[in-house]
View: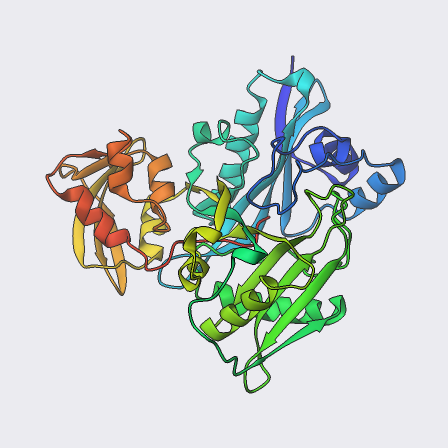
Length: 422
């Protein structure tokens, strides 16, 4: 069996696409409602692409931001994946290059032969050659990617409330205004709003080209057309928006649901005004919101905090640190301190950190904290505490108090979150 791992050529794009679950109709998501999905059933499988669809997609596949790799077994593509070029916002507000792993699959008849490991190795090498010191992905299964050094760095909630259970703690006068707009206007609003959000939100991802096109496209689960809600401040500037759906169901138990598919607000006024309408929409029994940050402040605005019920929590962005020094120097820190970190397989590093930046140098000094690149990926954006990983047996404290000091360095006021993926 001859195995070759290499980039896909233009002549091979159609064969590469046939390997991918969303093209060939194989399962691509867990068979249960996910935290990114507001529907009541499992996300349905895709219908296999027709030859005409394959021809069109193959012709559009190779771009400067989409870099596919494939495993060729005896000359036939048996598995593949790709890197997309995006940016992620790190603590301190810097937006750094991220190699986003996507479109990953190995045909069932070629599993357990080490193909994915070889593909992943080739793609991470490609990231390093392009100067990307971070790689990331969203995992369809939680047991696959830890072996390649990836670990969860952001998380998301899916929650729901009964409309009759919701009341806000205080009266509120909105200085701005709400407006229902069509998809053409929404397609203009969302790119500008997202750029403002990701400038201040740790963990947020830059959108792929075409992200805000086809906002009127019907989803695969049949949940109906999208509706677009926009909030403007007192000057008329857009400072918030939401996308929601009102799916019809013949089952009374599932009828009367408003599904919030996307929601962003730049100010407390916009946040409160948008939710006030969505949570009190006429003829609605239940509101379900997906892709929500784990520190959603809405619960604390309600007279009954139990009204907001979490129905799913899931990891979202998994990170892989490719260059320890560059990654640690790219972000800022919440305190001033110096620690020696021993990263298994990547050496020992003295981190001299401060709120305005950091210096990271290789050292032979005794380690204060020992961990693997997996744990470093989870800690990097500040959404996971080193002490939590220490109690789980995944971080080792070599110097008394060092893990608490590392927590103090990495702390963020808000949990990292990415509403946009790849």
